Image (tube, rainbow, N blue to C red; front, side, top):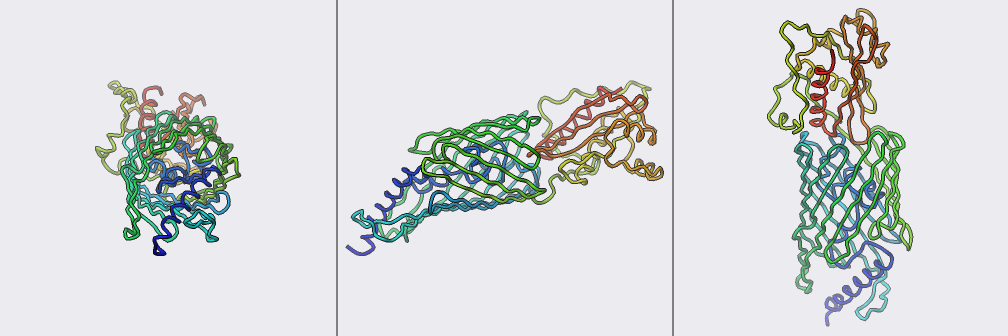
Length: 473
């Protein structure tokens, strides 16, 4: 028997030993190449909630469902992950994504899992040499958004190495995700029909079908309470199904706490936290097994403008933008009675909360434009407002109280004054407005609009303006 032929049973025995040892320790190694990428969440935020993927997190959660790539809270995002899993087992992952348009997002991700155990010879006796086994995947992802539904696809190159032998192949993932009024649902099929071809056919290494995974999840986020919870079901070929339960609580806009429970690959109990500072994020995840603890750490960064919206009237609305109108649209605005006098109304600068002043100004202009379209108000132009206030040496920045609104409204000679704030909480944007009667100082209207994307927010502002036109007199 040649040296190469002798190594084949040794490698097979070593892989069997590695699989059995990892199984005894509760590790996610299985005897099917390619299953490693399936059984381990790459996103640290997802990891801290026992695999629940649809409730928010860094861009790497799209590794579990490519449709989640369309849920970024900024134009671009990147993340870097490192993990240690009992002894010499480690994980490394890196990824990034960019929002091409409000509807299309693309991304590139890579993950590598490595394991080193004491090797054995062809007789099953310790060989004194380590057994190095690794599995890596590199994927190109794309996601498309249509109203409240997102669809995604990922094409991955998978490479598995055992000693000096390796095999590689292509894999495809498909996913869907839907969100509505705080509720989220997602489903993904991973490694659909994928196979690993033998890199060294002369050695007699046969190809093997990679396992397929079906993953589905449900969740709900209650924004006022800053609390979210959900469950994730996953089933890999020839393995038992598992269900992970997870919760997430944002104690502040910059600090989140997580916990989860799910027997199996992620550990019996998982915990995690996130600390955010401006565009940077630091995430930590911990899984507690019977044999020990697994640790993960991630750095993430958001880049590019968080919101990019055209100024009202800058361009004609496209058919794609009109398609964003929800099925249950706001009530139509009644046409003003013939000879009826329009109310004079002005929109103050919005207070920016966890967003840039530029983004806040864009949303204020968007609201002015939508109010003009209702034909119910005589809206004061922003340029005219600034001119009058400059002459009176009046600083309107941060003007959000009723007293300030009355003073500002009298200077502008309007009957109604709109004040409020625009900000970001978690992965959603919120516009809150109040309308003040300048003569009495009474708040005559209060409402809000929200959205996860620019298109969502534009629809929300449009509907808000329609409600204002109907209710404000």
